[in-house]
Image 1 (cartoon, rainbow, N blue to C red):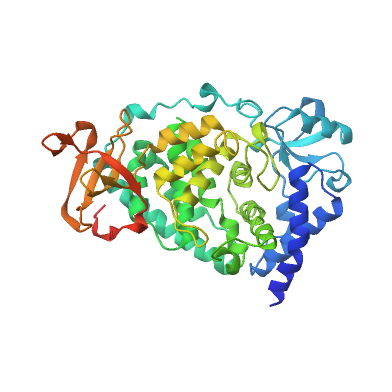
Image 2: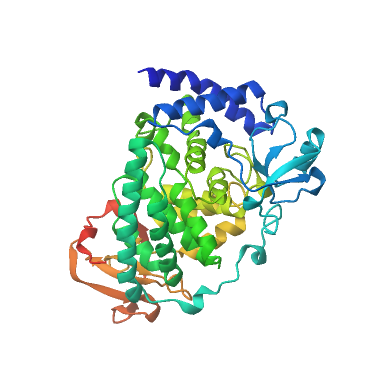
Length: 459
């Protein structure tokens, strides 16, 4: 009861601070101090051994430079004066605009930057996205393994990671600490599998999707982040970074009450303000995890920022959002739309892509949305589709040259009865449904609307 009262009494202040941060880069020092205190206090109730404030302000790989030498992508981690004597909201932030540098010049002569988080050589930071700046150097398409060949390896990797995530999340719930060491090996193995063929892992996730929403979403965003990074031709180390960030996007939910996480229907204003605090809870947990790249934190803290500045917690807009942060926001939204949620209905993958397409240019970068749709295909792997025969199929692989004609496994007949053995159709080869008409997809359907027992499939 005492915990609930603390949360409710804190919500008004949190809401005021969050709303204020959307409108200006400044925030009253007293409010920010109180907000930090609230976060640390609430965290202590959900953790038997909360992280100390010292861990929150931990500084590594510092280098002192004049403010005039700051460049886009550098990460300011300390000033030449106390943070509380300045109007800056966050005690550490990336340089993404000239306005930030101008503000710093008013208060400081020198600053300390974190060299580990320095992305000033990344030309995407602070610049408009273009095709050439978005794509990496690795041509994965030249070395794709078939789905059939990759499935056995993907199955073993998936099972190992499944168990490791469950173990780490259970430990987090019990002791309030994030232990990522058992996860790093399986995540690397998953990255290598997706490098060879992303369809196998995406298919396995869709047919083995769990009822535990938080666990399922973490695994989903992990796979999607790596798969999209691969489509953008990024090298292995960056795919690993994206995967770890995807896994931890919403780890801060562990510090929110079930009354919010499991509520059906819209949250109240106060509840929504508290729910938005999950981003900063995630950052606290990530900063307390040893051996984790600071770049993971940078992605996680931006995954609810939006192109038009309507996101949170910093209200960043446009070029202020890093490419990886924008990728995370897009992937997280797609994953939420296609998942079974307590507060909204699940939609089909195709409907989710249509929704994101409508949001391009406002909430999400237009080029990034177009690339994501190309990556997923009109009929994403794992989608359940209705064929022109009335039969129901499961998309098991993409045809890169003909996205409208994927490979489909027919699993239900026109009367919605299971088919055994299942029939695999490669629609690019135009197999005949009747003597005069080839098979084609009519529409996609949410998987929960169909009588499908995915445990029957040995994939």
